[in-house]
Length: 479
Image (tube, rainbow, N blue to C red; front, side, top):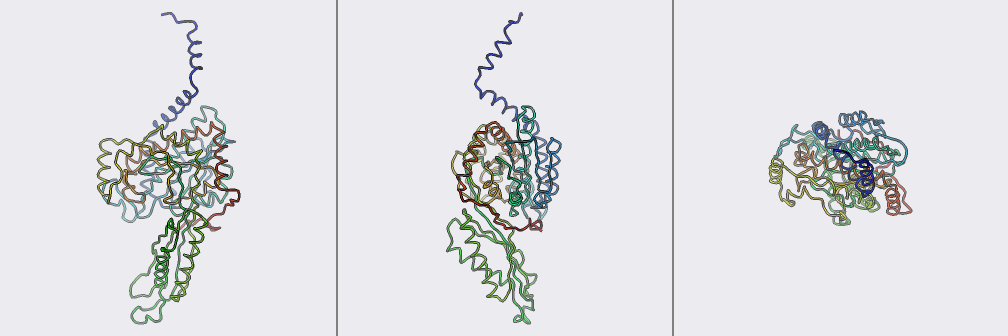
């Protein structure tokens, strides 16, 4: 059959007449495919970090794995930043814009769990990924690699930066990185988090400060010479009692919780040392500061009343997340395009078994496939992403890595996060982050609008300071 001499010209002409978003769809399809091709690699990486389950500031192996993966892909690595051995910054490209992606990888104490639908620790008393940070770090790395490949093939200008951020769980790793100026030249930051749902609506979080309150008394025989002793545990209990009385007289959004980490060794020995670990939270920094002063005064009063002495060490402090609707809409649109998580028969059976362990099931299994509608979400927990968001326009998403209805910080979250349900959510997050990053690289106007929104939301008189003060990173806070 004879070819038409003008066939190629006609095809080119038709191609040029196609709507501009045709290019976008083709480009996005290629990015998604590139992530899908490496699915087994990312699953293996996430499972390895899940198995190690290293607690805050102890994530040496997890951090090294992510660094080596990025280095092999052509990223330059700066390790041990902000005086934190397990923190790192990975860069690809040069110049403006600078777009950052956050990666976390710390586990939670005491949540070791097998991949089964009943409580069974892998190692009794060991840590476990009850907040899905093994998925977080891996998906962010996968997104960064996919964007790097796009930058290389398209010739896009700018800098892609992945931040390896340790100790989110009560260690405020990102706050030390912000304080060290590591975000000063960044134009936009994206992040995500494990969840039991898919959501990219605008949201915020609670400002949070924590400290270990330490009481010192005098030991004596609790029966033979109790009058010679002054119980440090009495100091802790007196403080706890006064804080619990205080709960009636605080704003309703306040959250205060504590554990007694040291209470003595034997009932017949008056404890000469005791310690309690406190968290205080509120949506507004100014109110949090007032609440914190009141909690400190209860500790001072408890020491006076029990004849003991008291000191405290601030462990961490996070600002609330500052929402940025301009960026958030970009992430939301891409999450809508990627879609949620669809279970196969085995996964559904596992999910039903997991839901059977809940006191109350308040979400159908099918909701893992859905994208929650655009709606402002009120604050719940706290995160050190908050401090980043006050310095750089920031947006993120949640992906359904857990069985619907699962709470974070539970063995059920650890179990689902260590198998295919978690890995499917990882892929949703990686693809959404990658597509959103590319969209932002290609839209200088979006960056400009996002920066304007940041300045407007934080107000003209904003002056950043870290809620954890000038202390060095508490590298041993989990020991």
